[in-house]
Image: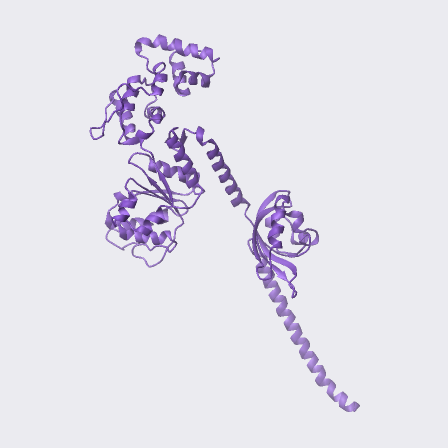
Length: 484
């Protein structure tokens, strides 16, 4: 019996040694996988973590990303910190509510909140994670990833603050970007522009020629998060139909006669920024189909290429035509029309906002000359009586012509329907005493300005208001008469 037992020992020993070798190999493989997993977690763009589902959410594991995102070594976080200690007090209630609402069937979540880093600064954090449950359905842990979105969030907060400031001061605003006007019609446009800038939706700007559709488009771009990216303006009616696809989508060298090199199109040039399509009603139906495909995220293909490209841009279109009527006539695709017509803006014609004439006149006079220009009451009456079918662009040309020829003349193509001959706008009455002076009444003007300055204790703003003129005009009068 003992002899049999002794005979079995070498065989048992060999089996044990074999099992030990297998166990060592398994441990080495496990350690290798753990090292690979640790390397992967430590190279994530953020902090991977695991925390207990206790009252403080005590952290059991933190990856090396904790140094970048919070300024703590992983050991510091694991040895003495918990989520409840680091999350901003104003965000803790919402975080608790979200975590408490998780279930074994719905255990994934996303959160955005603030955490205090090792330097005492608040960082905006995006957390995405999953709750771990025991066999009996009780939450035991949370695993997830934290990423730092502070820069992005601060830009968003700044933009919302700027938009709020614009909205709150809009009624006092006489200009927005290069648009000028204090009339109610323009105040409504300013409101619409601010709202359009705060969304990625497509914008359509309608209005007669010369009402400032491109200026409105540029204002939207400058107020949006894309303001530091390109603003690409395209006149759809000025491009040869044969070159439309190449101009919009780009082309490869040799793809057609005259294609001497590769070229990006308008869509790629506007990547990250804004694409403004003026005279959108001139776009052929075939191109509408391809542009609609790109707008819907399905990309576009340069001429002569087979690769599908994509571009991220905000679309603003403009037209002086009735696009809905064009759809009914079959000249514009209905799906394309609805895709570009998300946020509509209608620019008012100048004859509907004549109270803006003084501001516009002063702006153009100051733009075209540095010399002092006397504008009589009769000058303002003539401009007020005109119907302005060419809108602000026509006014711009009339001012330029007046400064060159010293005469008020309108284009023979324009409709010169006048207001009532005896009608005198309210703003002209205030101009009569300050701007409607002649060379013979220079001394009278000097006395009027001096008296107003003395009555207002030489406060330039109050004096300008009292005289019904701009501060800049008042400064010219002061310099002209050498008043001190």
